[in-house]
Image (cartoon, rainbow, N blue to C red):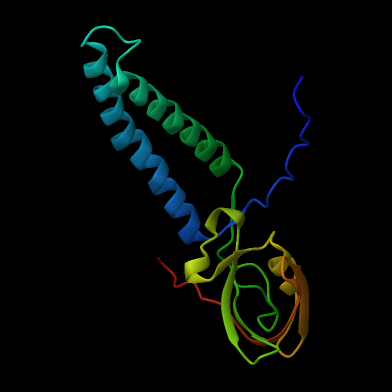
Length: 171
């Protein structure tokens, strides 16, 4: 008997235009480039004979299963996405798509962008709107204080700036 694990809470379905284009490119690459190449390699390995001891065949079949799993996930995820490309009416507050700066207690500046869960990239400062910090900053304006629970304890910040990337017509 296995251990019961409750299903994970469903993540937000919001995404930026850049994020949806990245996911579509990944799906296209997997389906049109990677999957045919792996399928060809599996066919060549299968032609060598005994499949039960053929490492190339076994590895190729596992790769195909991983590719198919990711393709199914991307297709399902892209079907329910809501692309947000409009700037909110109140640009002084942090909402989806906002770029913002926070100042911590030691006067260190932290730059982030609030994005959907499919676009998380800590290196470029993209944080999910579903994360504890994302939830804490949602709706905050310049000068307001932000607190959120982190593994190292309660983190306190002050909002320094908020900006939005304006969508250029025709892009």
